Length: 200
Image (cartoon, rainbow, N blue to C red; front, side):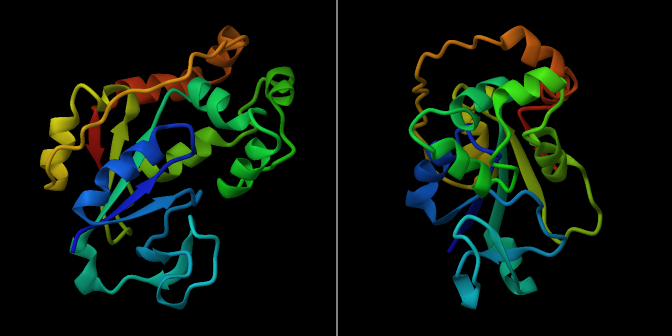
């Protein structure tokens, strides 16, 4: 049976993709900040004892590795920030920041005043998109912005049928877009220069 690990820093369509893959196998939705060198199970699987969206330290046996597709889906960080890193419903954003293993007390105003990626989105992205020969598995890095028009390519790569992905986004007011675009310029440039699917 195929297994899909759908990883992201949040606000990047990972839930949508994970739900679309469910007819084709087992799906794990992952927010661990650091992918392990040797692939691991998730949450309480195989006796693990971590949050259900994190790697749990128990290594996947070599004979199971070929059945697991690891996908890292990413998106323009500004849109991700407005989706998951600022208040949108009570303390949901703080819980999300716990889940992606970053400081829950960081606020947008801190990022803007210090002109730094205090949310750690760049680090999270680099952890998944930087090639590491010591890893015993591949990561399919997928750009959210291209996924809808080019979903057939993703289906072919994963060996699955149609995903029926439809873009549904809430219209937001990106009030600090220019400032954030400067702070995240290098990250956005790197994202835009990658192919739609980059397997590393």
